[in-house]
Image: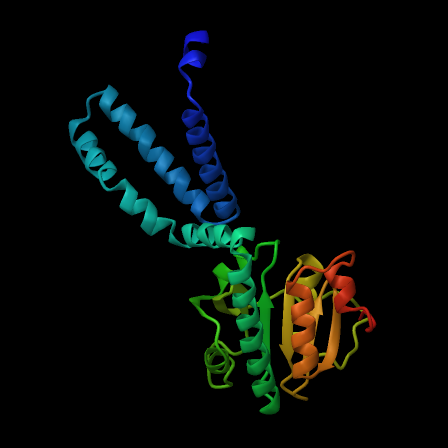
Length: 267
């Protein structure tokens, strides 16, 4: 052991730390997703490979050896969503803060314009922003989209003739992850009977997660914003934009939920 420590260079320490960080970030990215089962499957293949070499199962060993020659490509294909999410997290580092703020501003503007456009035509919509609490189960139960957010695409998804218009759109890392997602309804008995299914679903998901939801009523064309089990109703373009900016930009000495509901009553 002392000999190993004497041969250890500072480059080796950096090398180990970088590998550890990458493995850790990948673990965080795949936690709670179907990728965990894929990793278990790869681990089983590794065990079978060792066993086949030990008891000299030549055919199985040949097949597995050829598989490992393309394992890098297989990992990229199998874990494409998780790798993309990990790279997106790296892009959120403070070093790239200026670019991140520009992307956030563009995203908010597209959401505001889409909401106002749909509200004017009384097209119901449910737009969910994923935050720290991951919404893997809801994304996987919906229809995968993985597209850039645009008012045109949101308008197409929530068009009454679209098969996806009844569900919610979930935005993850600034992109539309899935559409046609169904959310749990709130169980709060104090909710006004005038609130429809979309508003109840928005409140339901905010009671379980830290998601932020924009709701457009199909009956009245009003725009609402839900977060932390509370909701603001009857927003216009200016107030919707202002609230979204307050939520997704750092707020000193004041929680985002309190900022959102500072001048409104909790439902």
